[in-house]
Image 1: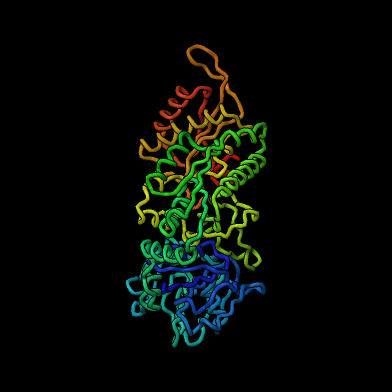
Image 2: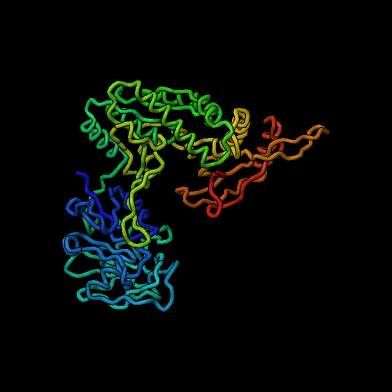
Length: 510
């Protein structure tokens, strides 16, 4: 059985990063709110307490019950987690004289303790707290300090419990991964058996047991998540998986044909449904962004439902839901937030379909999905695709949508994306695309006045899409791309580049 680590979340912005670092050590871990009832302590080999925006001294501070953990399982408190341990087990936490935030260096390290094996004095760590531990609990030992934070790390004697006031999970803590490895592997003895190959093997086995001879229908989007989910399901149930790829008329140039061809070579049971005319008819005259989204979502459900009903005795709906979509988080008031999944690969299908849900990727982060896909031999071109919004070009055409506007934007987008690939810039960009503006501008071509459309190019760098910054593309590339678009796409006479970050702007324009 896979050995697991439990991360109890107190609302830190870094909680998911702890999980990612643990997984980098080939150790499987799960995140739950500190007050969740949805896990069993006995299923885990070690426990990590996250940081938090709360103060342990506040009346409304989170207060987990650690009676089944402390002294019984290896325990690591990070930042708030460490302060909670100190505050509740005999030590003292007080407001720091100065906010302890940013880079710091370890001025003292107990190198005899396995926790800091291979970590030297001077090692850079990252602090982020306004409280500080001023007194350690009785029966504890100081094992690290910085110049400003005396009690930077400690351990409780006679049990496997450690506390650190810095964040080992962030990039700026140079030996952070080593410290986590020391605690989890050398001290807690957690087996490093979490690998893409082991995930595939275990998942396929579980899918076979769960699904048996049942039929599954899955909506493919051409993106990474749905493709990897489909490949896993195909390995488990073969031809009992029915994939549907809907052309809503708002895909990139030739994407419907190209993606279907890719899937054909992967051995997937895929049916392509060209519903572009139906979508464009329903969208005619609608210019409100939210109105367009609702129409696209509704028509997709109708088309998908029609196609699913053509398959006899389907019992399951497969989805490419990934871990960030399902993680329960701690709300601003300290309570568990509701799990809301609004980004289903198939547009959020309604209850009336009466299908059970199967989500083979729901425990993976995005980068892990790509790694798993690579281990199954999925083409790097498909795995490396930029995210593309569900409504497609429908939210990149500002204003109403017509077939001519779609054609125009497809041509512009194709030139931009292919240019990024040709110049070796594509993989350094998280997401790129073009927007068609609802305005005309005056231009001149061959001594003649033109009055045509303006388009916006957008390229951003990000890790998860929650925040993003614009990519500083070379001027020479932008110049060449602009010329190609204006000379090659009838109806466009002006190209601009979006240099807005998120926030305050969003990645998409609608």
